[in-house]
Length: 185
Image (cartoon, rainbow, N blue to C red):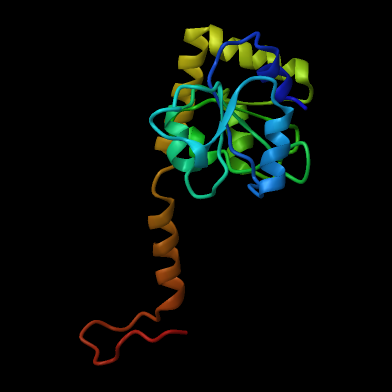
């Protein structure tokens, strides 16, 4: 309701990748029918038809994290319904993200909104405004992209910190030169 009208209007000449959360045949077919321009499914893609469509629909799972590196802007779904889907993958590539109003449970979304790297919207008009600005204003896009990259860089090391914490919780410390080995609690 927010993104497809912009794609279908043809007002902005861009290549679009749609990666639905639900990749069942019926859902993918429904999305494809809602498009006015030429589309192609990822499963149909080959060298001969690679440039033949304006919209690529991902009809498989497990490849989205590889695709974000090619994006200029990402619209992430879910935040008009039950809750925002993962924004970390596009942000890792410095891709500015637009999403709906239900993001409050996602710390990175809240923090990146404050920093100006991602953008919550409530209406199609708000989407069109920020989307157009990100595509047309190179300075704005570059600044937003840098905010995303800096955020990721400043928040690196979570795995190491979690493992260190777990190690302290799991193993009992022993005295140096003791014959006892650490035991699981």
